[in-house]
Length: 240
Ligand SMILES: Nc1ncnc2c1ncn2[C@@H]1O[C@H](COP(=O)(O)OP(=O)(O)OP(=O)(O)O)[C@@H](O)[C@H]1O
Image (tube, rainbow, N blue to C red; front, side):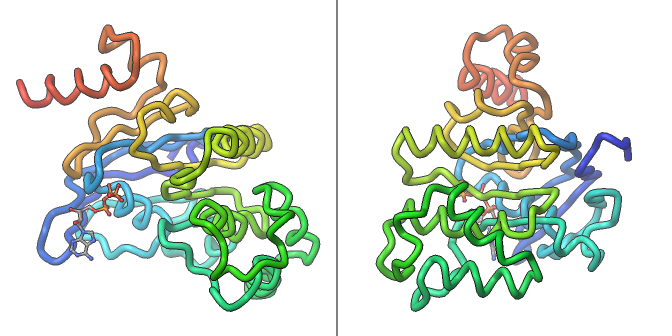
């Protein structure tokens, strides 16, 4: 593994209920990058993320995260993971949830106010999670993932259901975190988010079509937008 790689995945195969969901996936996620994981619904994005955070049983291949084999207990507090279905308590307020997870993670108490501010939930801090909108709920989940200042953030569709302004604010936050050296892996099935990433992993049917920068993808496919680049890669794969 190169010193600048936060994540290195080699020959990863994952089967879920007998179905081969990831087939021989290899990729590298550079430290301090905002890497977009893009592809159609069901292509395996969440399964790849689960493999990287160490909660997925894999059939073969290897995943190295922050220099250690995935699953190493020392990695637990160094990775933040926000799932698509937020795992927060509905009968607690936003701030109560964060205080609870803060003590579970042994993060400093001052993190609660910091993460509430970072995700723009100050106005909702004393609101019960059960009464939040979908976008507020996913930002609460993101806030939990930010506790303890993890070195790797794995965010599964964090901008779904957000209005364009909030989406923009979150992407600005992602870039700020990356500029501090945090590595972010962000999934989306919306191609226009790809342009905001410093690197892209494009997936289809459990396989990676590309692991590259947006600029290089455009030049190698001879296209002028990333949606076209994705289609061009799909067609090239089908013709092969
Ligand atoms: N527990 C499971 N048992 C069997 N199949 C599963 C299970 N979880 C996921 N799958 C299948 O694995 C494939 C990949 O799922 P995954 O959730 O990784 O895709 P995704 O790209 O994240 O999709 P989406 O964008 O819709 O969230 C899908 O075909 C899905 O039906």
